[in-house]
Length: 206
Image (cartoon, rainbow, N blue to C red; front, side, top):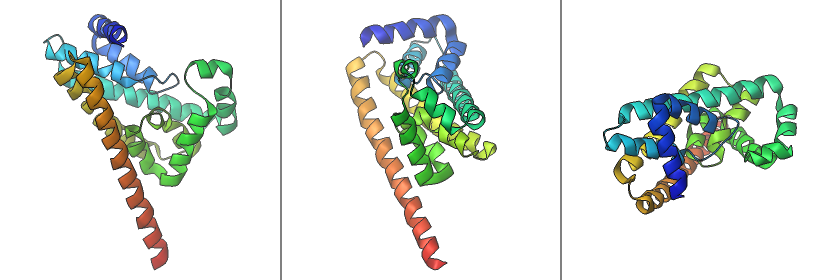
């Protein structure tokens, strides 16, 4: 893990903010891999005066949105059948994508609606692929961008602060990341429960 972090430290140092944007776009699209190996190393460099923390967050969020938009339009134009067929190919599995993960994201979207593109960005595994079912459903694009941007901003800012404060202490970084991820999942579940209860009350009134 230390070697992995060092590798991304070198990338952030050499490619700068555009490297962050590119890597986060890839992370948020068709080759999902942990964003915690992109943003915290860059934020750590910011703590050393080599980068600007606000720009790290800005380019990280922009990259996340770009990647999500790629998934959105691929899903919208290719359609559900083709996306699932591609996801079932052995090459896709090498890229950490499979039908079960897409199905999980799709079920989450169908259960919680458009707002899932926001709260889904806070849940590991689902966060990278939640834009695919949004594309299937042809979700309003403006709403999609707003929700995706808000969710990405919360996630990227949290990772950046962790990297800025604990970047030199990998053990503490890993521990706090796990704890915060759990908090995000609990918050997402609470929001989802609130939405479901609100819909149920609405149906009862009708």
